Length: 385
Image 1: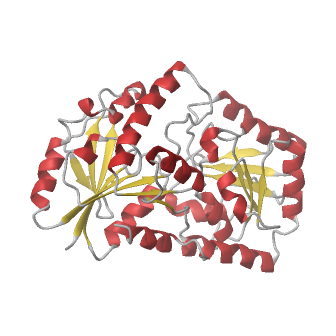
Image 2: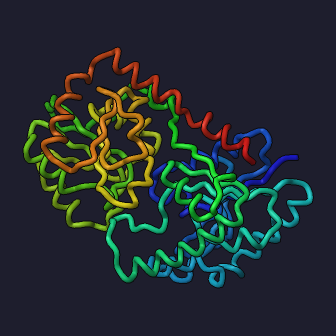
Image 3: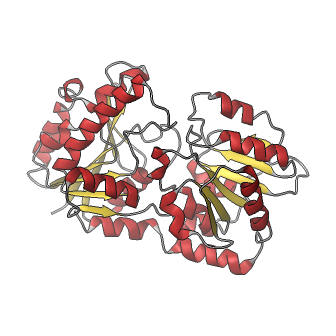
């Protein structure tokens, strides 16, 4: 029997032009021979003419409108009262489909918990990729605590109902096991990489770097958010004027003043949002990949998507405050720091500078990344369904 997969996502497919784990998982399921249909179920702040549309990749995007457009009202995504009626057309659609197909529910964030309890799903899977109850900027406030309590209750309902729970880090798995009191249905599947996309694409994006620049490029690619240590990068940029710091991705800081200050440095360059298909071309402009995360509870749980993408492109990487990645630390391959010491950051990057063109090390980086190909990760996950 073929399956219909409902994937609960944080937002519309092309919301910020970034491709997260959930996008890759949805496409894997869409292309699986046992799949009839994938429905990308997501909240939206704006009213749509039709409840669903067909994306160019064949996935059906089904939107549920928020209570009101302003982001302060997004709490309604976690409380059944605010979306129960809006979900009825979907339930009717699935009720008819279930006569012919298995219907599976995949949560990729703890929104719409009512879904898990209001339909006779064949399988419910919670793919936990973030510490959703922790503020991304690491700061506590009355609003943050209100948000934490609402999300925590929604997530607990989903955890209790789920048949299988997959987590992107051991830290997240440990947290889920604590809530369940059992590890029987909890599994860890770290993030992977579309290996060929990064390892075999040798073209560079043009007209990005300053004319005649031939120094070292330290790069970050992805959503630019408050979890990054802008103060540290600013200090390093001031001490190492011969280096260029390239940031590629949308500004998810809401115009954070620290990010604005960083961009005033002459050797810091920000491209803004770029098309996903161009990311490998930007990757090829970079000499050393950096993941300059702050020390926070949120970042303890993070397994960054870019680690294996940098390595697949043959780049060495420096990560900070990312305990989930420590086990991959290897000289001239991946360096990990548990400090925000500027001089330590510079020392490691100076060491990595000397290995940029070392073919043996480039091949070693690629070999490590190849063992983490997304298809293998998702095939193993699919066996749980």
